[in-house]
Length: 204
Image (cartoon, rainbow, N blue to C red; front, top):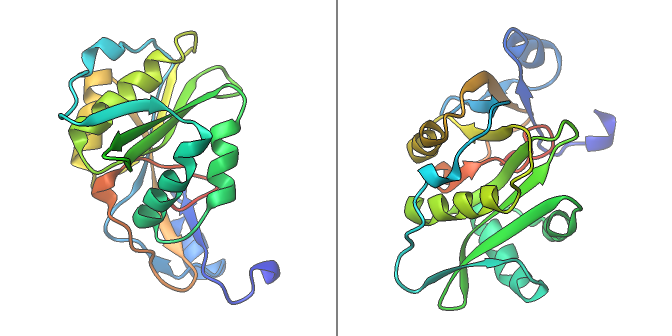
């Protein structure tokens, strides 16, 4: 941990390991507001179970370079820190699709789906102000990658709308992880976080 220095850091503990990280590994602060949830199925999912109706004035667009400044600003408003390079690379990654929800020139949500090394479609990040918008985003993401074998979406336990979407897709919960921090808890509006960026690499 020397390379981190005095900075804060977060980790997600698998079942049975929370005490080890808390008491012996330098992550004494336990998140009490939510758990990180891994949802996975190897079975086909049907995006037709999701709505395609979006609010007036909202468009869902495949990400282009000109979207990035607004996307960066929106991401910062959700997670509270800047990660422009990571997001730009995320949008360029091979075997991935990213869509942006736009209203009056502003980003009001975005999401990415990627093909995993096992051939499943993994959704994340998936953020939006409005559950109605995020449902359409999720449908577009899934439909953009039809030849995957399985579905992955990692969520936070206190986002009730995300649970509702997973129920529509029959995406079962397979594991819950406990979040711990080195220095202090990170604050974020988890009602707008429908899928985590990458459960092993980023807090949200």
